[in-house]
Image 1: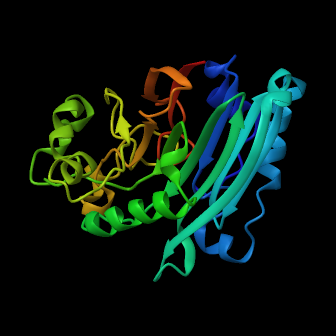
Image 2 (image 1 turned 180 degrees about the vertical axis):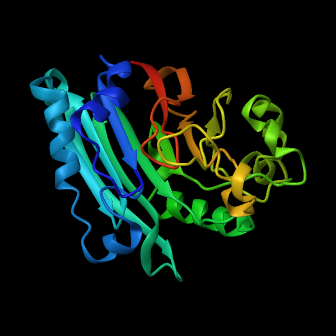
Length: 282
């Protein structure tokens, strides 16, 4: 969110295309204020109030969690509230020897009917050359969020995972129009393929959208094209992964209906990503 507080028009632009879901999980980084300022004041009530106003009486906020500038909030259709139980929230720090919350994750878990769900929002280590630290952060965020993440029927892990591109010697000017060919250099896929990253059973849908980082504010232009700073090179930093418990007899099917970014949102140097999931369960 680039330290900003979107107005209602911007929230409408963000959420109106995604109406009529039963459950909304909205994760953000640098929510309302910068990471540095969030060390001293991390309150996210203004953002939550704006979201309440948008959703109105048809949805209820069942839980939120904050770690410095990292935030997660879950809204559920009001008619389903009676079916919600076991709501829990937690946070995991991965900054500076796991003592600071400038990086890390927040998580919220709950049961709906007989289905257990966890949502995790991460902000992992930054900079192009820190893949190994991101792998360590990823593992810590998943395994320390709860006593036994493997017991949940369905988990979504999202956020600024900060994985970059490995090969910056290629012609980056082409990334605007030939972006899918650059997925060959994506660090998240690479680290998983060489088994240096344990994805703990998480999978990812097919990426068909442009890199979500790093743009000049209020534009769709990449900063790297002008600056050639490797830490500002375009990359798919913002991701959504999911995990279905294959031993679970409650879930009959999980369908990822959509996985995309929103190029029309220009308030930040990142583009928001979103996904729809349909869960069929007994």
